Amino acid sequence: MSVQVVAAKMAEVELKDVPSGKDLSAGPSLSAGKGLGKSEATSTSTAASPTAESTGNPGKMPQASALKRTDPQQNGGEAFVNRDGTVAEAPRMKKIQFADQKQEFNKRPSKIGRRSLSRSISQSSTDSYSSAASYTDSSDDETSPRDKQQKNSKGNGDFCIKNIKQAEFGRREIEIAEQEMPALMALRKRAQGEKPLAGAKVVGCTHITAQTAVLMETLSALGAQCRWAACNIYSTQNEVAAALAEGGFSVFAWKGESEDDFWWCIDRCVNVEGWQPNMILDDGGDLTHWIYKKYPNMFKKIKGIVEESVTGVHRLYQLSKAGKLCVPAMNVNDSVTKQKFDNLYCCRESILDGLKRTTDVMFGGKQVVVCGYGEVGKGCCAALKAMGSIVYVTEIDPICALQACMDGFRLVKLNEVIRQVDIVITCTGNKNVVVRENLDRMKNGCIVCNMGHSNTEIDVASLRTPELTWERVRSQVDHVIWPDGKRIVLLAEGRLLNLSCSTVPTFVLSITATTQALALIELYNAPEGRYKQDVYLLPKKMDEYVASLHLPTFDAHLTELSDEQAKYLGLNKNGPFKPNYYRY
Image (cartoon, rainbow, N blue to C red; front, side):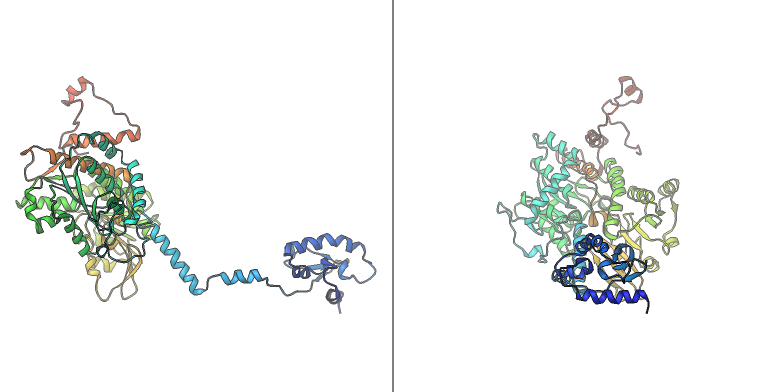
């Protein structure tokens, strides 16, 4: 038998005979039994070793007390080194499980518990990514607002929203938005004393967000009475709607309305005893369409319509061409301040925000096709290109197509790239831009979304067939699964991505909202005969005024024309500085 084995066995025998507490260096587990941690036991034994070693006899077989312990950090376990250099492994002691460790282990989630915890975390993330606010989807109350009887703190119940108790949160969001809407706040301050909208009864149908709330409160400060519905079933911020209702506004909207709810809310705004609108502020043309269809006699008292979307303006021009437009209408969408700022700069930022919040997609190296190269398309392409995406463009207009080519994008037909692209974005204002044939040919995992106002661009109805399975991933995100297992990721069911799934830059909306307010003031106060039953653009002077109100934010300083320069150009020193035919 070797010396090492004999030494180990003798050490084991002597360790068993050591009384508890007399030689801590020989038995670290005994220390543990008294409640010392591992580090405490190790330090105690190390301190005792020199004394024990000095009493040893080199002529005899080393006893356990004369053995030097090695560093467990280096050898991966406890061991003793004999004086002759051989190493003897210390006896292995059964680890003691402390009561508090066992309790801690029992606190760990079970398999089912872990799944529940995962769902809880996932739901929390979804709530925080909801349209503009974490409060919007946090309510567990699934009761339809139409079935509730709610009143604000003043006892007024002329509204229908998700939850009036969220008003305080909504008020904070409105206050934040006010900081980024300098022109509207300046307009409110300058014109509040004059009350240019005194007597105006404005019925509105727009996205109900914190930015819209600032517009509504500005119109109210200028003398108008307002009743409001949402133009999109997914874009309403419930807490903002609650704050407006608490402030006395008649608001009929909540996030996640059904199609029936949508038209019911518009009807509640319009059809009310003792109140009839004399101004319309529309976004998409649905409100104007509803009044034409259900209450055509109301147009006898309506002074004008202000419309801000491509879709709504297209409908107005159709009515005008058919001779059915019976009041003047202001085309805000094609005003310079809307077209060049809201459509371009707003979408340049919000397209990335909407896609990130819903899919967490990385843009670098992704192949993206953008359908339409108008101002919205230009903004989307610029943002995606800057993030490293490979961007293709489809266009019907040769001028816009040439702009896309000169900007470095490849112009294609959709069916040429539909099998290879990772993301499809529509922004044309048209219908059936992406049809079932295109959807069938898309690659697995392709993301499909729309940046146009209307939900007509993607043929979503063709996907609601028995052979396809719809799977809700999170709010506004659906997997549509084919029988062979292929799936696409559809965002907001083909509705406007940025306002349905994320937020938009407040400062840019200040420009649009100020333009809308000035258009309302102009139409409401215009002398009879100035505007006929037709569609008009905002006067150039007003566009320039809106832009000038936003310049102080950037500490910008305009250069002024001298008299000689103004005469040379044939301009008024105070503007307008461009003719109506000028293309910015």
